[in-house]
Length: 328
Ligand SMILES: C[S@@+](CC[C@H](N)C(=O)[O-])C[C@H]1O[C@@H](n2cnc3c(N)ncnc32)[C@H](O)[C@@H]1O
Image 1 (cartoon, rainbow, N blue to C red):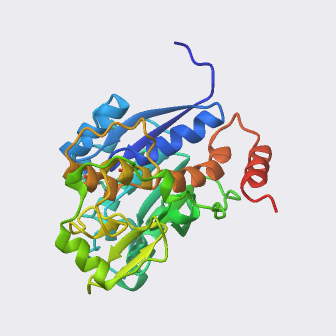
Image 2 (cartoon, protein in one colour):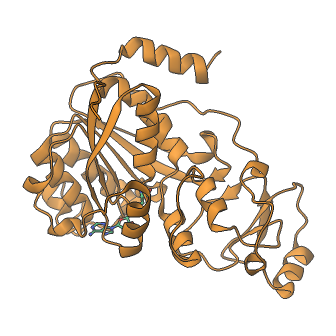
Image 3 (cartoon, rainbow, N blue to C red):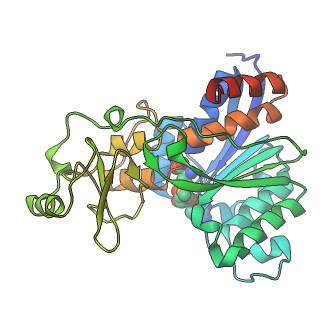
């Protein structure tokens, strides 16, 4: 069917299960823009299965094996990339310092394809990694490629999700723009809107674990999510601590009694209920734990989109955003 709306082409690198894609497509839909994914890549077979079941396309595999010249032209690039130590650090040679890391693959694609904008996401620890050198090298490499680059640490809890998840979000644009990160949008969704009412017995902790938890902690909230830290201390909140792909079995327990279901984990990351969960519970936990919080990225996209789309009246869209989310 012919679509006369403005089309924005994007690529979804390290796509996982498509958190960036949902955020971008939703934000574009709200502005009556046609968001078109022209390339996606993830090395993990199970992530590819989930992505294909939900978006009808199987992502390409290992990005290190893909020639940047083979990637289609696009307007905006998304990448929530794994953080790895850089081997030659502190010498500030720019891009060459990043060879052998997955960031290098993002940078070589940006260099070749010159998208208008990009959004990169990583764990908050990237900021302090190697005393700040890793981030410095990343930012310098991006600036050397001709981009105006900004970064901020955002928390999913500030963007409507009941999950404390802090992530660095790096935004780059070819032109100098007045981009500002979205102000917090409060309040976050109550857990009652996340938690399922009928939960299979298999998600419940053993009586031994439940009793042990309840002996050592009393929560001031109901419902609440109980979190056990590395030293075994329990805390509980009306929101979840960050979901983690490789967390131990009982790291988070709803009301100290049961683990989160796969659907609840996806909801905590802002994935809508139409999202099909087609993998095992173990894989679903890994995928949700690796994903980017959809609402947080959507808020960033809403502030960036007026600079990427040519059909939008920048000032009007940004004013409307402010009126909606920062009425004072
Ligand atoms: C932090 S997760 C990104 C998750 C994604 N933003 C989402 O919303 O689901 C990083 C992803 O990078 C993928 N990955 C790691 N090495 C890769 C490589 N060499 N090529 C392509 N993907 C890779 C992993 O399989 C993982 O899914």
